[in-house]
Length: 259
Image (cartoon, rainbow, N blue to C red; front, side, top):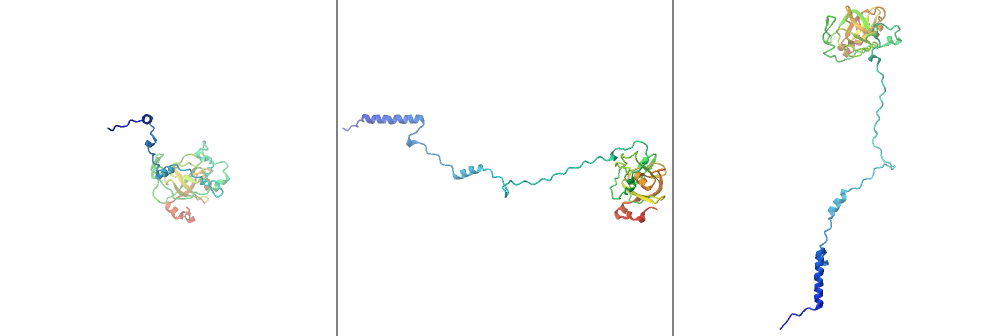
């Protein structure tokens, strides 16, 4: 009768050692060499290239042919605005009674005439009908001529630097005038038949409102016409320079001067 051979003592010890080793490895998480986990696959080349492009090195600063950094576009400098003193016409120079200069400056007679030009004429004030000292006045609106003969007066230091009816600052040294009905602004030629002098003025104010007077000239305009001293009035001829005459330039014709 056949019987299984009994293992030797040495074989039993070797088997017990292998079982003990396997148990210890299972508890510690370390597998025998033949049971280790396979290594993870390497990162694909496309993914590696994408990650490398995510962090780009800074580009070097540009330089010119001499190795220096080029300058940016030059910003033009804004010139300083010179200080402009306030005009003397902004504040009245005289609070006393009106009157001529005791010693007129020598340049006063050299002040040039006003130069007519086309200007916008508003429909409202100061070109709407009004009443002054109980008398009604209707300013002209049509491009029509006007000729008057009568007394001219003037106003100067008492009103110098104050506002005119047109909203401008009155300058007694400018060639301007006040008229009851001529449009503001407009232009007129004033002739003094007593001495043959003629001036061109710009209408920018209302007045005079005294019986028999047809125009109130600036001090300089009256000085040039030769009646700033003495009575302060003179018989004159006033002719409007119409917008049509300004457009055509016919107002410059010496033959059109009042006589």
